[in-house]
Length: 115
Length: 109
Image (tube, rainbow over all chains, first blue to last red; front, side, top):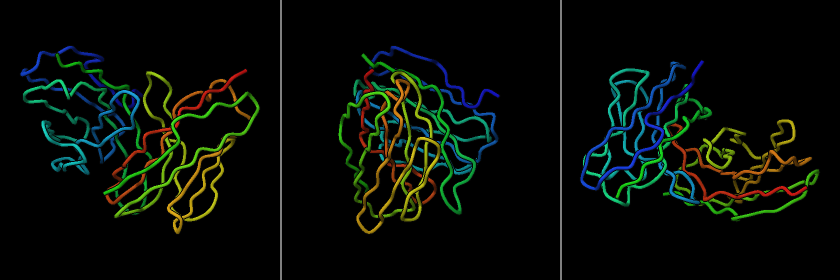
């Protein structure tokens, strides 16, 4: 079982360009999440999806958009990248959001540099 | 909103015990989770406390006091492979996590 895969592994992007970070899970989890982690800091939630067809804003959503067309995929799009979006991006999933906490499982991350 | 505080770094020797504290301020709280992250790697789930008290899983124990807005992670019989960053995270409605800044643990021989 692959768990969660992310692509690309790393990317250098010119400011003003758009980019989509891909995330796919094979665990049939209902919920998925996108976080960013800046150097030496904790993770911050960008967007989340409790189930296919629904999305919500996290702590730092500005400049990012997401979609959840099916259970397995949760792409993150930067419409017009800026240098402050340089970070490591982690996708995560969990199998429930109701009735208590469920461990989140993280992908390997995408290292994005915006110049 | 949420805010969490963790010490930035702890150094200990192999075989020792290390405790990492976490204090939080929150407007919505279901519980406190702990995640481990090795350099260059992804966070991995360690433990979750919804109620006051101690939860033990092997060499790892996690404690929560809701009245004090305080928790800690205890690592016993430290091993070199335990060198990593450890993050506490407040769990809010919808299983959304707010992470602290993390404690970097350095284990020395």
